[in-house]
Image 1 (tube, rainbow, N blue to C red):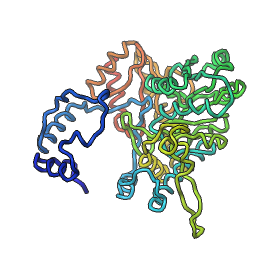
Image 2: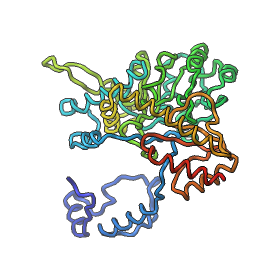
Image 3: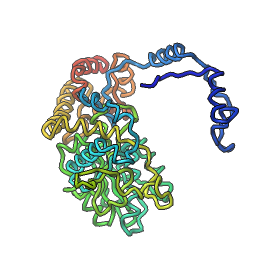
Image 4: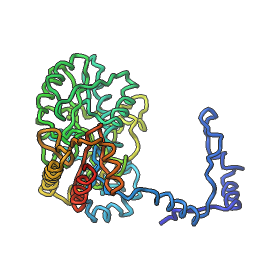
Length: 439
C-alpha cells in the first residue's frame, strides 16, 4: 500500500532529478508557452499534519443535511459486499483491460454488466461504461450522424431537460454543427401533439426520458418511437437500470439508443461522478463509442473475454475514431454489476417498486398539509415528484435547510422531493418540518 502523502526534501528532489539527468522539475514536462501557467497558485506549502488539518477544517464547513434532492442523483443502499469485493487489489490497480491474459476476471465482470443492460433494455449491444448520462446523450447525438444517410442536423430534447445535461449535449453538438432544440412538455410528460408538429425531416434524433426529470413515468413512449421512425430519426431514451427493471423495455417501444446513469447501482450519490450507460442496436455495433468487451475462445477452446473493435477509439486510430471517449470507467461499471447481481432479478424489481410506493406515500402525506399540493403532475411517479406550495418555494427551501433537510426549488412555487430507502427514517421529520415552515 503506498502512502497517500509522500513529501520530498530539497535534497531528495535534487537526487532524483540528477538520476534522470535533468536540473529542474520543469524539464520533466513539455508544456507549450501558449498554454503554460506562469503565475502563482497561492497555495502555501504544508507538512502532512498541516495538510490533514486544513483539509479537515475545509470539509468541516460542509452542511450536515439529510438530502431529498434527486433530479439525476440518487442514493440507494449499497450492500457491503460491493465495497468488499470491488476493493480487491486486482480491481483497484487495473486500468483499461488491454491485456486479456491478465484481466480475465475483470473482463468477465464487465461482460456481465453489458449483458445486464442488454437484458434490461431489450437492445443488442451495450458498452462497458461512459463518463456519465450527459456524455452518453452527447455520444448518441453524434452517433445519429453516422448510422443513417439523412440530412437532419437537429436534436430534439424535452423542454424539462436539466441545464447541465443540455450544456454537455450542446458542447458535443457544436463540433459536427448540430442544432439542439426543445419540444414542449404537458403535465410532466411529452406533449405528443406538439412533438408531432415540431418534428420534421431535419431531425436526426429525438430524446425522451422515463422517468422524466420530474419523476413522472412517461406513458407515450411508443408514440414517440413511431414519430421518430416516420421521420427517419433515431429515438434515444434516457432511463436508469433500477427503473428499467420495472418499466417496459425500450426495445419494445422503438428505442434505437438507451442512455442514462447506472451509478444508482453500486455507487450512491456521488455529486457529479456517474456511470454513463449506452445501449443500442446491433446494426450500429461498429459505431458504438467507448469500450466493448467481447466473448471468444482461447487456444485451448475455453471461453475467454477481451476488449474488441477497438479501432473505433481515438487511442488506436485517431483520424478514424468515432469518439474521443478514452478514460476508463470500468471499476464503476464493476460495482454496478456486483450490486445488480447481489440483488438478483426479483430484488431489482422489488427495489424499483419501492421507488414508486415511497414517492406516492410521501406525496400523499404532503398533500394533507395546508398550503401544499402534491404531486403537481398526474400519473405514476418514480423516486420523486413535484409539489406546489402557496408560499414562495425558495424561502421554504431555505427554512428546510435550517432544519437540516435539502430539497429542490424548481420554480417560484414548485419544490421537488426525492426519496429512497436510504432516507426512509428521515421522512417523518421532513413532513413535520414542511408542515412547520409552510404555516
